[in-house]
Image (cartoon, rainbow, N blue to C red; front, side, top):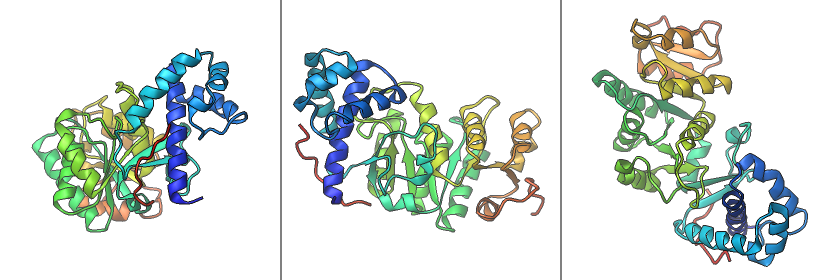
Length: 319
């Protein structure tokens, strides 16, 4: 099967899958076995309007209601750019690191340079209200990692993550934005232009189809996707109980490495740095230029640093 045929099949299947998600109001994990059950009767890449009764019987939804939902979903999918890629779990281009996630999405949606998924990468996380010191540290980290051809991964959020993306673009360091929205939506709205530029010069990646409406919990799953994608996460700064700290904790459960700075450890008003530093895989470093050697070296017993793509394709009629 050619890349063109595979992409068309993936988009048709993703439209059908999303139709069931919206129609049943169930989670992806609940829909997957139902969808596979339907696949035992009809080809999943066949347009749903060819088999409305089969889908209706399996889902318990009126055929007319399903067809109406399918029409809405298809309209949203047609707003994707011609070069956007829909990856299905199991495809050669689907990132292996994400496949190993316990809740790996059936589909991923991407826009931009797919080759970045094959390169070594590091995720930068931190507060949405950074200090001047945190801002400077973020820029220094991007520069240090960029000098070693490391792709910068972040979540397009305000604060540290936005600074990481902007600095990477300014320094011609490749960057991947993992979105909590679909490719055709933007959050926060103030980063619309930044998202557009990353789509042209880097890569946008999301688990959310164009028909899925933004929900607060989407950003939790976005964060899990971010930490899965990279070798490790660099936590620039955050408050106790902050979202970046929670993301670092999740990365630890994924057996990913986490980098914390000595300046955070020295801040006695914070509890999280010392608590995280006791976890396996967490490294404390003094300076950004030390991160690369520590992040991509074999794990040591001590965790404390004491020294100074597929072709671009048009969107056909997916019926």
